[in-house]
Image 1 (cartoon, rainbow, N blue to C red):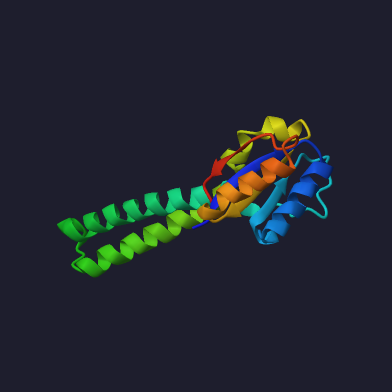
Image 2 (image 1 turned 60 degrees about the vertical axis):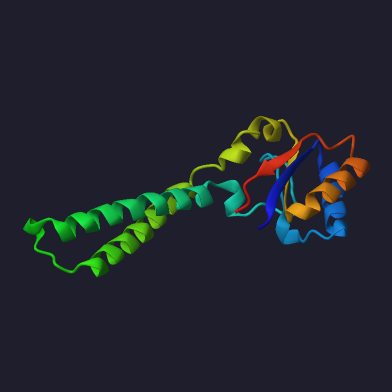
Length: 167
């Protein structure tokens, strides 16, 4: 599973140079995302997709867990309480859990689209200041060589690196 690394560059020229070096290193454009403030022009740099701009992935995970738990609990109550008159057994429990998981995921995803990605928001002050956040998804075994390459070629522009959970 790929892990996410992030770096900051002070300007467009530095960000463009880092992206070129990442591509030369073998990172595909689908695994590179650049986030900047609203005033910056990102073209031709790879722009972030919805999973990088919003909380959609984490919201879907939370919704699936919560919806599945609520569906399981509701199904157990419906099957075991005699007043409801349901005698469907295990099939009803499985169906209720699946329905709860699906609905929880759906509803949470609808909300998550409108919520900014918290990992990016933690550094919003840097982005608003004009820096470019470069997000790279790569295999864990590539990380030491990738970091060494970027540090050797961009020591003056590489401001921070760390891990964000890859989607």
